[in-house]
Image (cartoon, rainbow, N blue to C red; front, side):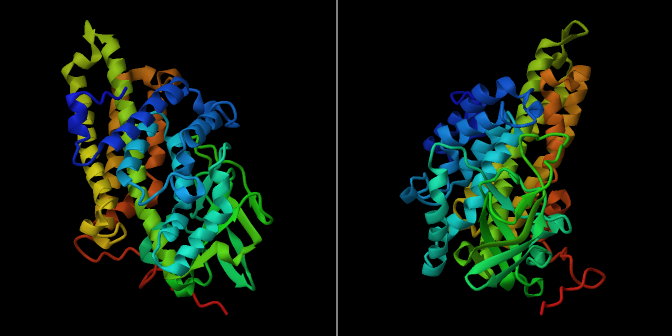
Length: 441
């Protein structure tokens, strides 16, 4: 339970980063997690169809609490009236992910998919704003109604995977092709691993007209579903995070109106901004996974007796519990500071600058790598009961392994951190690497 009156809370979430409105939102999501997710978290991964447990929870989060309207402008009946607060988003992701990583991902990625359209809508440039307005004119009504709606930022591919998330490649590894024929975009290619793929009502599809041209040919296109030419493979069965759907998506001569796509440096800017935004969102997820594991561990070791006293009262156990508490303290401070800096670009610069990217990627990598190691240490204190589904800890143990691979993986994150200090080249192209793509005729 989140006790906002305690001294510990005030130290963890200081007023210099978290205002009163944000505290109210944090409490809203903390109570939601405790009431709606915690009682069934040991059953979520067995809900194969998602109909019994997962979809009802998502509906309560996205419709009843309005999360699917967060990046829909007020003019369309949404909740967005200005810049989206990164601090609020980090607080929300931590609290929901404390109960279930997949629910946090599935709900959060709907807003991620709509992010480029919202960024365009807020642009002072008339042509760019018109693109965002066109997207919301067409698709906003479905997200402000009483039905659960899902968005998918469809990016990764079977051939290149995280190379697409490497901004050094400037979109040249994107294999999904878009061609502008008359008044229509025609899309061919395939995607893989995107959150919400196969269940989304709308996809923001990452494409390239000609990879030789890199950023100039980079394209973002919105494609609703169901839609002619769009199909999917089977849903992946993973070691954890089952409430986050992943499947292959195939685009076979998919035709959509010209006005649903945006090409060139502006599209690339929105893409880069979206990637950098997720450092805070998934950093909040990592914080939540470790916090949930910590709470489970603390409760269990307080009730379990060994050698005549509670397990956590043994000094060897207290060393592990204290280490997790210490790292959570560092995690939270670093993430809130980063989110605060994201929210004040007038002071700290845009989130997709070299130095901001370096800071964000280093914090993200440290959170997930450390969380994986610490949850494994905690399993030693849980003993055999840690591996039993109804005791909850094994869920965090499985989920955290997947979180390490999000946002390009740990290696790419640490490479990005290096760029604060020297010009590390970790693109896919250059001497001894892939050749630059040839220009298509």
